[in-house]
Length: 327
Image (tube, rainbow, N blue to C red; front, side):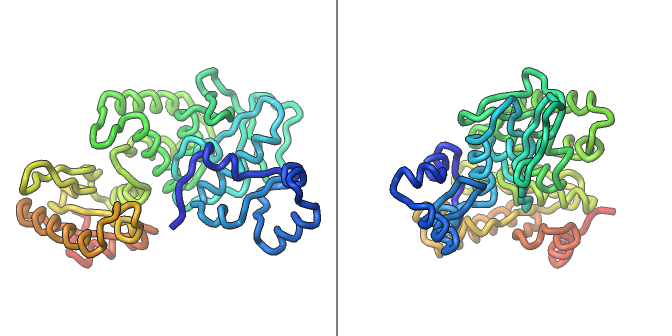
């Protein structure tokens, strides 16, 4: 399966044409390796081994593009929007940016290129940070830009993940930090009257919740709300048989049911299973599910990524188990 990487892990894998030549490659070698798909051209003059590229999620591939652009960049522009998101390790659900985004406060001599899109916008001192040695919009400013400019599902997953960075420490949730984050973001949105995409941002921001632990859970929650369910409870604790708790992704409290998003990595990725055999994982999941149903008296329905592509698909999945919005 693809792997998640940081900028520090990617940086040594990204090599310039001059570096390759200095290590014995000829111009002909480089061009031939690109044609043979042994080398991946990231942008003009910058390359990665094709096998390393193949192991990356789309966010990781965009991060490689960002790093290459940063190495060539001159001037005061900072990475922003989707390109800031990958530096902050935020997911971009099903969104595949083709260009690196940069923001500058100066409109003079500003131009975009085939693989770089430059924005002109005011940046307050607190709007700029340094991430992995690269100047980038702050986490809050990045979320503000994403909520306004990318598809709702991608914006929502990124906003949830940002709040999770602020307020989560494993199963421990700092409600005070989360509330402060939401309040500060709301204040920025209130001040941005007339900004591009502000209606979408103001619609999505109050619904975000960093307790959703994956993009699939975030999108599931968004689709449930679109379908007319009340905002579901998140990571609902159910007392387990021998102490402790089981946690259920969603409490559909207005219809007396539980819901869970099932990512395939839980079953197929050995690193996620941590060496536990698939049969044992499935057996433990069945025991857990039986206990939750039996002790709560609630129905529990599972769905997968294919069911959350649209609200209609999730509605059909829920309806198959007799679960419908309350209206």
